[in-house]
Length: 616
Image 1 (cartoon, helix red, strand yellow):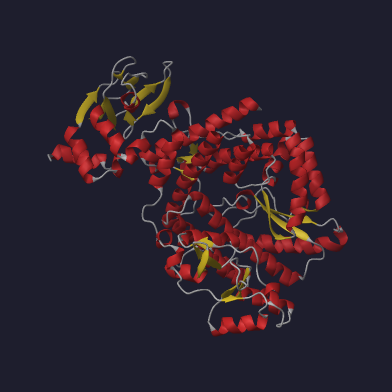
Image 2: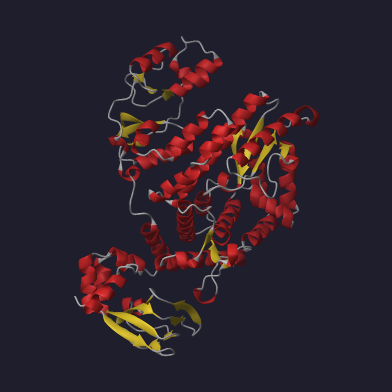
């Protein structure tokens, strides 16, 4: 291969989707490839002409027009032109013109069509459907160096049969068997039955037997945990790890053909990889002081980096990071009760925002509140709950979850109220919507109880969602609110950049990336009367209820995953470089593939925003 061809080949290796092809395939392309030069102002493709070539821009820029003759996009180095006409009839439908002196690499139609037929990356990249292109891109930008957690099956982690006892076994007998056989858990299953009744772990002996002074001659079915979570032996260690983190458990029975084969524990997985969410969550629940929690919270950033590098998808990564923050808050609440004594009346500690949706990334501010029983009497009870809220809020701030700039915290008396007052808040927000109340409504429709009496929140939400579903005025104003932030895409598919520190211009991947989709999903969920709050789950619920099409759901989910992945990878890179993670991605940090598919994702969001605007 001549020197010029070697230089071309090196460039092709950096261009999507050619960078996914084998060396042999690239060699064949280079052998048939031609080089063309186009002067500024000259046409490359003219409507009505026949085109039998695919063009890759090496240097320069092209302008693409739509079928009405309006400029629709500008293409630059690493972008492609001519693929649409080559893939279809060969007849050009859109004008393409050079706006700079442009050097092009030309691939003949027969070579391109052969690649389309034989190479999946080529087919996916040049798909006419945006969502197919985005799905392909998500796989491409996820780290290829998959960790052992991704590749290891849970069936490979533990081979010993779990200890099994019958429900009539006494607590004392069970404890003796666990001690003698050196296990930290046992399963409860009666002879002749195929279903597991429950599980008992060493935690039950601490939290139920010892703490409550139970009789050791009682049977194990009085302390076992029912509704057991199991996994097939083919599940990955990563899936098991995520399940443990989400449910705050450390043992999962492993099934093979629906038969118990083994038990996988957090320790089994930790042996595979020590820097993970489950290990950190376990340590958080064992912490004895705020100082210990503060020290442990410093591991959140490297854990995020590890999750991103492992190839875990953005949704699961955010869920794991949210679980860490939730565990810190729960531990602080237990510490507060240990310090202040048992609560005088029932209460629910609720979280809002990204943590409630299980969509947290790097450290953020705290959003929380207290719903108190209607037995609340301010003179008798508020001193206790203010002290509890202050302890938790100060502890969260020490752990990096800074005080909410908008003062949406349980330390603010407005957000520390009995259930009846919360009902009146929502009634006013829904029946008399104004700008400030609408802002609160956006925050407080993303609520989750993490401690205390969850029924207080459930009672509130049941009445609230019935009211919102019937209020067209409120829904329409929430639609307007949801359209406030638009994707950062301007004319000709140019990115709209915002100024950040030291006048650096960047894409705001939170405010103009994920937030527009979060806001759309919230409105769809309200229209559907759904109680779910995770964005992906809201989109699913909206599609089931028929307020969002299946195609719209799929498109928004793909766009959300892609934008979130780019955002997480940016934050992971900043953390590795010793910087504070933020949401501002400079365009020069993006590969040509990421730029292209971010534009696809933003266009999907813009299209769905326009559709919602017409319906309001």
